[in-house]
Every structure is written in structure tokens, then in C-alpha cells.
Image 1 (cartoon, one colour):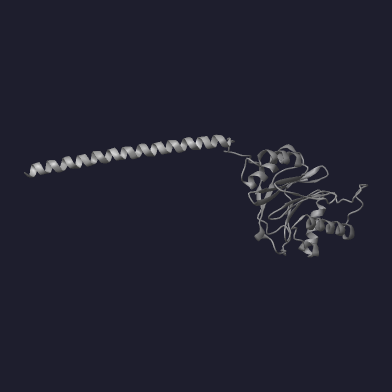
Image 2 (image 1 turned 90 degrees about the vertical axis):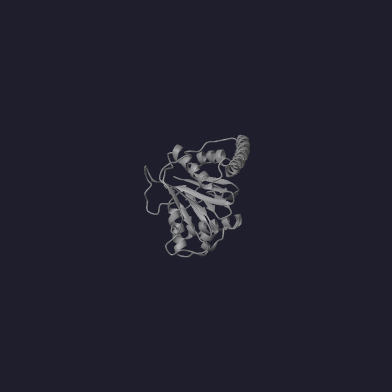
Amino acid sequence: MTILVAVKKNGRVFLGADRMMTTGSEYAVDVVNGSKIIKLKHAYIATSGYTLLDNCIEHLYRTKHPMMENTFKNRNEVFQFFLDLYTELKKNYTLVDTGKDTFAAIYNVFLVATPVSIFSISQNLSVNEYDRFAARGSGSDFAKGCLYGIYDLVDDGVTITRLALEASCHFSVYCKEPIDIVEVKAEDFGKLHAEGPKQKMKLLTHAARKGLPGMVLIEKNKVAKNSGKVSAKETGAAASQKQNQSKQSVKSSAADKSLKTDKKRKSK
């Protein structure tokens, strides 16, 4: 079970996921290379569902399958990647008939993040692009509520992503820390790494929930008013200080004149 979150804020894109993996009635969060985020040649991908899909994608990556050259520049290219993935799953892996729906499915859902775009892929391979944020997985309802509530209030994309993941881990029994977050940067792409798709990632990992300690919510108009008051006070204080300095200067000048007059009298 999983929570996947992607956020685009102030021209930057972030992708995050929890690390909880379940097998029957058991779960684990300490699996080696257990991050659900996978780095491809031109995008990050995260999946919720069978962990076998993780193995399949890694195998295709390590064998340098042509589909790994996909650039994910638009919805059509993303769709093509998952069509190729479905074909490989049917042809060379263990995918069987997945049900009686009109279209075939692969059970898992995905988020794909590039330096400029966020895509969500459903079980039937339908692809949608999101302009601000997206969430998939068991805890997505809680994450979406959190994202809706804080997106316009918080400027930092990492914080928004983290809070959405934390909300899912707090309310859903199927999500659990640690959580991983990565910023999707153009300079991090362009080649396949021999170590595999889970290496060379600059993950920010949180082992426990942090919330928003030390932060409060203030209305913008109140901030503006308070800022104006502070500015007026500072201006008044500066004027008062200048006036006092002027008075001191006058007093000092008068004292100097008096001292000079006394010296003249004594010299006479």
C-alpha cells in the first residue's frame, strides 16, 4: 500500500512517496532500496500496487530497453511508455488477464514527474496531466485534502509535498514513514546509470512526522497592515532620532562657542 504525491510550485517540481510495503498481513519499512521513486533517463516515476512492477521496470532499465529512451515531454509520450510497458509485461513477464473491463489494465497506478510536468497514470493506462499537484495510492484522499488546503498558503514545494505525505501516514493504515521526496531537476537527467534506477537520486528522507512547528497562519491584509504600522513606527523613530541628534548638535555648538569665549576672556 502506498501514497504518492507530486507538487509543482513556483516553477519547481517535487515527487514524494512513503516506504511501507505489505505482504499479506505483514508490512515492512526497512527494505533495502525501498524507495518507491525510480529515476529513469528523462523522468522520475513512482508506482503504487504490486512491487513486482518495480522489478520489471528495473529489469527493463538494466537491459537498456528502447522504451527507456522515452523523453516524457507530453501526454502522448507518457502514454506510449506505458503502452510499451504493458506490451512487455504481457510478452516477457507474468501479467495475465486482469479482468472483464472494456480495456486491459496492469493493476498499478503511477505518477510521472519531469522538470516541468506532472502526469498521473491509471490502471487502464489513461494519462492525465496536472498543473499544480497530484496524489495516487491508498492514502490519496487524505493527501488531496491536505494539498487543497495548504497549496496557496505555503510557498515551499518540499513542505507542501511533505505535509501531504504526512497526512496520509497519519490517517491511513496503509501508509507509513519513512517518506522520500526528490526535486525534479533537468540537470539530473540524460543518461542511464550502471548502478540501477534507484541510485544517484538526491532523496530527502524523513523518518517521522514534523508538521509545521514554529509556523502560524496570518491573513495577507493583516500582514500588510502590520507592515505599514511597523514602517510608520520606524519612520517616526528615525525622525525622532534625527531631531534629537540635531538638538544635541545645537547644544554642542553652543557649548563650543561658550568655551571659546571663556578662553578669550582668560587670555586678556
